[in-house]
Amino acid sequence: MKELQEKLMQIKSSLTPRQQKYINLRSLENFFQYFDELEDEHKWVVERIMRDYFKIIEKHNYLIDQRTCAEISFSHILKIGQYYKSDVGFKYCLKLLDVFYRGLPVDFLLLISGVLAKTFYFPVVTLCLFLRWLYLKKNYGDKHKTYGVMY
Image (cartoon, rainbow, N blue to C red; front, side):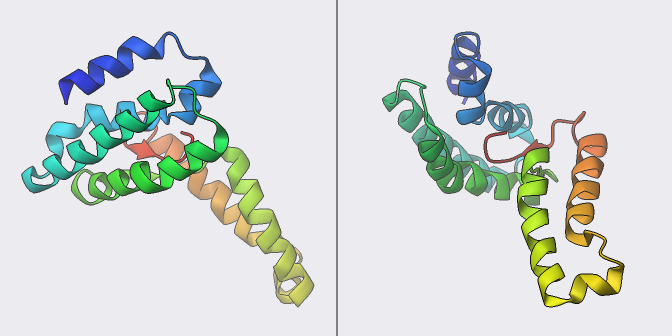
């Protein structure tokens, strides 16, 4: 596992911030930081998924597009995150922009259906997602116990 971490640190400086986001650099760094805290039976599973993930991004020469990022994030990063969530207490973190992309359409549907009228047309879902984002940023961001897609 150390060789994967060293490889990630070597390529980090050669990638642009956008490329780092597309290979889920912050999620990977957080996973490496807390790897030793995983339960023993989960370590080998996580290591196998990580090695497979690195093979995929190496095959693409670390230049991942947004579609490929979404595919490998859902097939690898979120799978790994479940082990960290149960063993170490990691939290799935949305990006701030995703809070609005997910919350506002739901609030719009609630507005059309008339449910939002009962809350004085206040965007409840967006507010809840924003408060969750703020809570995670404040309480888990410094501890690096977060992961996510393009995070």
